[in-house]
Length: 223
Image (cartoon, rainbow, N blue to C red):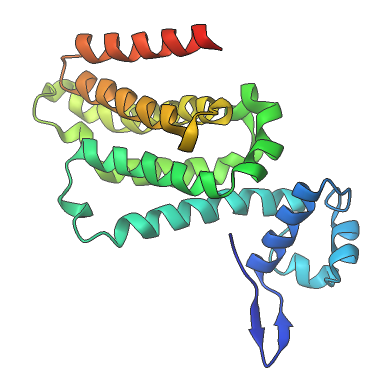
């Protein structure tokens, strides 16, 4: 996912290099990512160098999430048409892009998160990611939809971003167990859940909520 820099054939250790080595350590099943001393010793990194980038290994785990969000945001902003999208398409684009990036790091995410999937909202490593996610969603401004009564619109901003976060957690939990080719079922769920959320803002939720519920009921009974 990330690479270290080389300068005059001498390895230049940076945050990306440390992240890469940490992910390799997790995926190899080794024990040297259990504490900073063992991690640095195994990877021939000075502890002082490590601490110049991260305060702990928990900081490395949190940074992996924010780096993935950085990559998603960069991809979205590089699309010249993105700013012209409506709120629904922007939210869809965010979810699709995030899960494309997650797919590139699926082995790591399965190893580090799946065993704790029922505690996702409490994971310390997700806190910085959650803040970035909610700030981005706030910028979508779907709550400015003119169909929302004025008395509700001023309260819609925090509710919308928090609702999108809960929606993300549900999608991510589903994705962790999705064994369909290219996680196609997750893509279907993203579309249906965003349709339902958008229709709630338009005060016309029944059809989309029924469609979403039918899909979840079917998938639940197939597991």
